[in-house]
Image (cartoon, rainbow, N blue to C red; front, side, top):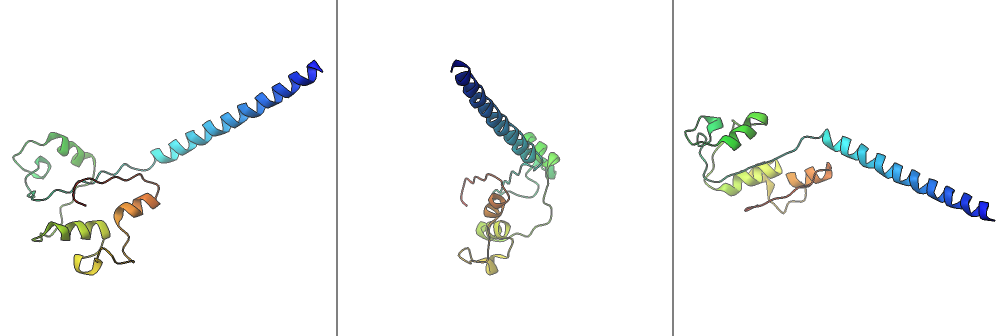
Length: 127
């Protein structure tokens, strides 16, 4: 009887080991897949002139933003509007302000699209 009890314990321990191994391998695979996706940091600022940042030729010392710009994507084609909301809506929806309408059902905001692609999103400020 004693041998039977030891066998059951060994098998139970074996099952637990393989479950833990499977969980660890799954976590490693998920981390590896996640590492292949680029990080996205979107900064939108009101009342910031084109040449206010060092990365765009400005006189103001902005070393951290300049480094981010050098390692990422800089936007250089734009148009100015008298209200900041038009830029935000167009950028977040991919549609012109007059056509988007934030309550429109066919408009999927950028953060929602990113979440559906597996990204974690956060916003701060006046979104």
